Image 1 (cartoon, rainbow, N blue to C red):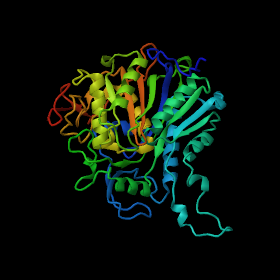
Image 2 (cartoon, rainbow, N blue to C red):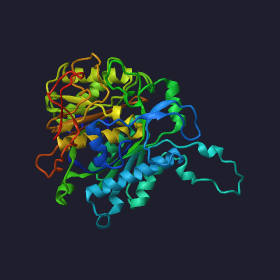
Image 3 (tube, one colour):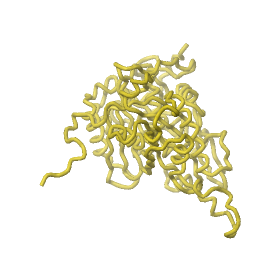
Image 4 (cartoon, one colour):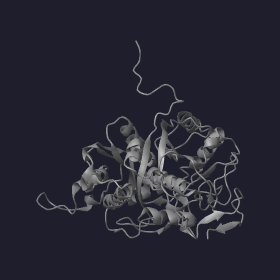
Length: 446
């Protein structure tokens, strides 16, 4: 009896092609819109500050990259929903889609889940009293997804993914697959998260948070041999996706095109990672094969890069195995030293950053990386970014629970792409193509 094949067994043929990203919206601790955030990343701004108390929880004593203009008295859910709506509005406007002119029953919403809130447990009321806030904005992890759909009248399929810090990248992957399956014609995808004090306390108890003694801005140090944990961040990132042929037909400039995606699982432990990086190595090799790329075709990898010992070793080991110990032109970086680990929003935010890097020909720095971990000889762009053409790039996520995800994107050559924007005049740009992270050679863009 033959077995049903859901996907092609020929991995040399891309499973995904012809999905374009035409809109991006961002909110982080560094800014409340796409270009403000991107310029801050070019400058290497540091979003983390020391956080002693948050809401009803006292004595957190951690660095955190919070969105300071948002109401700290609001619940985590309320903050996450607010960030998501702002990012979604910007992404839709950026895409130049006229919602009144399209069939919104074919417009899907695919987002990460977000942390709920437990402060309602402190409300003391009888059955006849009014609750202090709407119950559907209090706990449901799909509240932001529903708010985006109802706020903009998007009536297509709604999906929410709770796959830890791979959630928003997986949300983009599933949106792209739905487009190719013709279950929708447009999709907005990404993720959002806000600091939940109990979640922060849990991470602190787990021992994965970096202490902020001295300077909280440099607490998170991805790929540095002296790293000691990550910093929690708040953010939302939304991307508008459509089939490339549709984007070309309406004359929409494209940030990049999804070539292939992969999802795998790391089965060694819920939070610990395989020191030999077997699963992540296979994911990267498989992603290259599905993209019809060689290792030399990839110019930039936006790594998960949390600043924890296991994550950093896992990623560097896998990259070294797949791309060689000393790849000539490959650039790798993590932005978590600047914006923190934004948990459910991380994958979408970092994919958006990769697309902006492709647009402007600038690979952002890994801030706070001074003495790189001695695994291979990968250029992790310590402290300074570089100007370089990026035609093909990879974004990967490595999440608690064993969730691994990767997306390969390219800059299309035969269609209209986004015009390059000038870099910030104070962008951190390395003078040479590769120098030690401790070098002082630095050119600031005129």
